Image 1 (tube, rainbow, N blue to C red):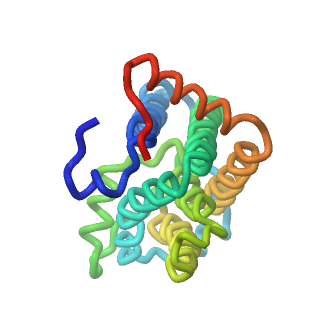
Image 2: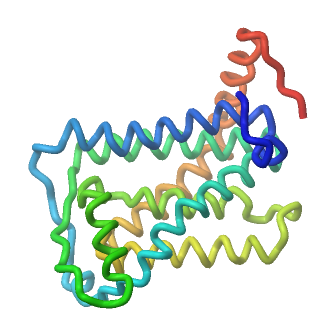
Length: 228
């Protein structure tokens, strides 16, 4: 897979196709479930506590910033080692498949507030136009962000400062999903819990090894290799 020179040095050859597959799965789950369940009855999990959370348009910066955080986090987690890459990507794949099932079994939606005329109100309005308020439970934003932290947690090869930042930014993303009214507390809790559950399952079972063997066999069959 041909990459720009800036990414060529950062993404190990063994993780390039699996990362592309992870992105494809993310898009398929996000858009595919909306297409399938778009006309179905949706449930609103908003509580009185959620309604008490203030609407803060400026936190849309954090919400959008999560996408850059994921790019860095997915690359960083998968470049630590093959073993860590397979565990991380197996956890990601398992979680996305479970999210798809939940989105279809329990379609959720919420009612967004009017966008206030405030600094960054235009950015919040843009978010509302780009992202429809469906497929909320669990929050993919929270799932991806927590997994990015789990993937480097305890890794001494990653600077301690970035590990701390990763944990704090994952929490900031969670708060931004609430203060932009994209998600409710149940969505956040489910996203974090599912990411941790999948990370533990991938590491404590043979899931990560199986995932790695599949990709390594595929590479051999197509005449490729896994240079370091």
